[in-house]
Image (tube, rainbow, N blue to C red):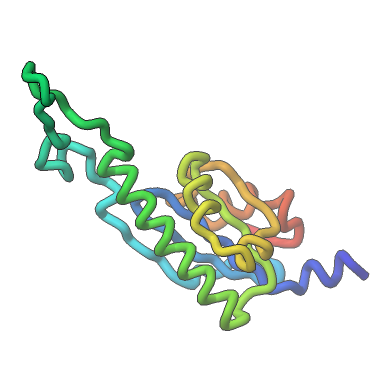
Length: 155
């Protein structure tokens, strides 16, 4: 009975990286692409984004100025901003009851950012994660990667 119930659950699969995401849906055996989100800023390098140097300060006792430390690079800030946008998309889907469970698929560092941006109730709906870069994968490759989490799907 539990296996039949799991097969009928409405599942969203959020497959993302720093430069884009695909939102997939499955209610049974087939994956269906719901939405693609492009994030071209995620393809930029720090040198493409950062036109200013780190802040500079002059010591009070004279001497040479030194750079202030940076806490995050421009690409990290862009990635965090995109993760927040995707977390908001997932939250909206949860609030609208568009899924029963959520699966996150992303390369490991972006997966951590995405998980960190989810609100508590949405995080509780995450039934599994896959730490792989599969945003550009075709449907059958994605389905094979999800077999352990969603055994009923087919590619």
